[in-house]
Image (tube, rainbow, N blue to C red; front, top):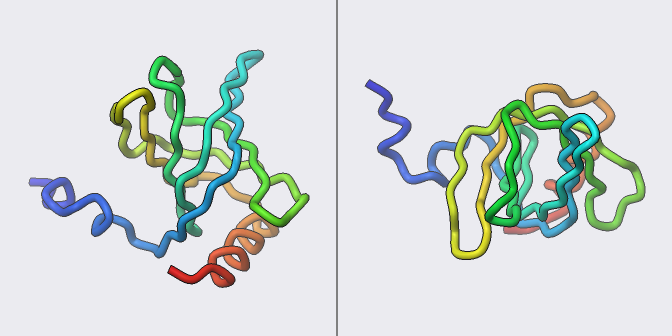
Length: 114
């Protein structure tokens, strides 16, 4: 039995996330979809997409953290996905993240207060 599904979504995370708003690009072949981050942590992030956006897991994401100019590229696995009004909210767990990108995310999260 999977007890994790019974816990509240915020309690299932294994690492801290901080609120963040920035553009995120999902690239699948020649198709590019734009979304918006809602939060980020060392192991993943929550994203907001148009309700009709379609993408398959794993996803290839590119983004820049607020206040930085360094692009971050990450592969991620979709761990939850649901409609919320006119949008869909998708939680992803990073599966591939370069060490320098992980360090940028760690610094960003450490600088934010929740």
